[in-house]
Length: 309
Image (cartoon, rainbow, N blue to C red):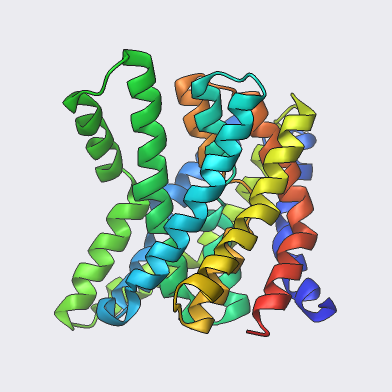
């Protein structure tokens, strides 16, 4: 486990460096926002395109994998949402808290870290997890909150949702990469080198941006935030492990990658959604801060365990 910890430490060290830069105002919130945009729209998109263009879609997709992850995440989602309702939280707050329990930082942290630690073959399973998070659970959150506010479901909600997905560069880059890969043609050398160079900036910039964004977060409802961090870092990977290793016949290596992805801390885009809808953003912010800090140890432990599968 010490060897795994030493491998994961540089990733969290860059996050820590970003945090200190943000705390000291060397990196202002505005600078952090622009760095995040650079990663989201350019560097990470180039990395995802390159990964997707070299994947065999037929070998990548597995119904057992998708069902195991969706059902495990759905159970944790329902549990966290139910606990929020039992505590007296409103329905919209319950939906956002449930989202905290299952949406991990797969894009900015998971893809670069798990690919390095678990091998290039981890790219496919990680992209499947990312696709389910974006297409299924983020859609559920948007539909439920919009429906709760309007008091009914309308086709307009689905139009807004579809436009949001089409504007998401992570989804667009993966789809375009898969489409290119399906042609069987190699990328022209200048294009390939351009994508490689731009994609190489994704890992350090994404990790630094995570840390810098955490520096501006303040604590609120600590007991709730600790519970949400526990649900994400412990309950989610445990539920995924049971579904992937016991209930469904998921390939052992792919199951290990899925479990490691489930152990990642709460994603920053949960805060973006909470802020957009005006539902408990400070609570979500605190859960991101706590889960990211604690994940230095928990993610290391989970990766050490899944390497033995």
